[in-house]
Length: 299
Image (tube, rainbow, N blue to C red):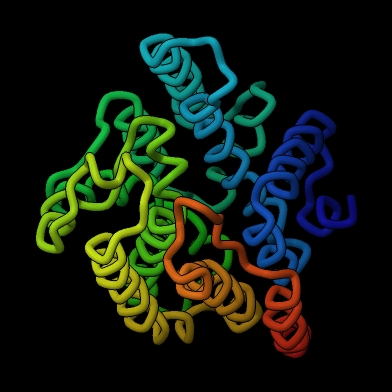
């Protein structure tokens, strides 16, 4: 409630929507939520709203417990997404998630195209099960990840438009790190996100992945993918200096923790089919504690 008050959110319906978005963030986005706490309280509700929108759409697509077919999920996503997009254009929503999102978009003049791109990528998840090339994958990743960073920039503040390039790269790095960690889970959903052409260069086929046995070829392919994550993270690092000072610690922590997923993959010796690479509580504390001190100092 203090965050809402600090952000000037007093309307009861809006407050309930923002609270629901925060609940989704706290429940499902442990790392994202931790990083959000490093922002000034007045900025946090708006970041929660972005997460709530993305998470709710993702749940429609990826809910394995659902009895809905992919066709029915696509229809549900289309209906909900179209409704929220219409609400953004109208400037008001009564949807339990959309109300907070629309308010956030209005306050910060966030382009609707970012949300259209995100929903397009979610629709792709219901019709596309693999990508031949990295370039093919990037159409999906732009909407599923890069736009998340772009949406956040008006909220967290920038000193230069060059920060937008870095935000895209960092968003892509986050997503690629998740793809590496989640190969097994994505196979459960019938999907492979690692580009097939790049896998083939290491002698890896879809069938080999589906056998879920770590081979020398699969390990070699993962090493290449991890190198790309680190390269993108390094290229984005200078862009963090172009953010508003009070927001830098949040993004620095997010970068280390999200991209740090690939460190955890290495620690389990690439055994992604047997174990889930997780960022330890100790590492979260180790990253968050000094980041919190930097955040407080910047305010």
